[in-house]
Amino acid sequence: MTKQEQKDREQFVAAIAKEANTASNPEYLAGLLLRHGKTYLRLQEMNCNGVGTYANEDASVFVKRQERFEKMVEKKEKQIEARITAICKELGPGFEPVFGGDPRGWTIKIKVPSGRTTDWGHEGVGVPTS
Image (cartoon, rainbow, N blue to C red):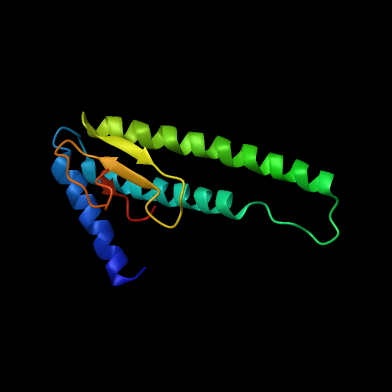
């Protein structure tokens, strides 16, 4: 991890801790958001890249493999989204996740009670690992 990445993570944790004055341990919850944000990013990258093809693979075999892959990614996405939403509820009122599917930018942004934003779209505070 670079110094800039570490600084971004620390700034995110500090911002969430400052906003979440009713949560019992906001630093821990912010750390969970970072962890789950990284997983969500990997899922979005996997979804973007697809399952890939093999040389001389029959088209019907590829279609079945692609369907299984898409179901697996969708199931894991729903699980992670539910967990992140639960963490936001635990942080207190006004915290709401915004999920994005493009892995080239932040895939998760957190709306905070004060309305503070760190992204160009002014949607919320971007989770640096996502």
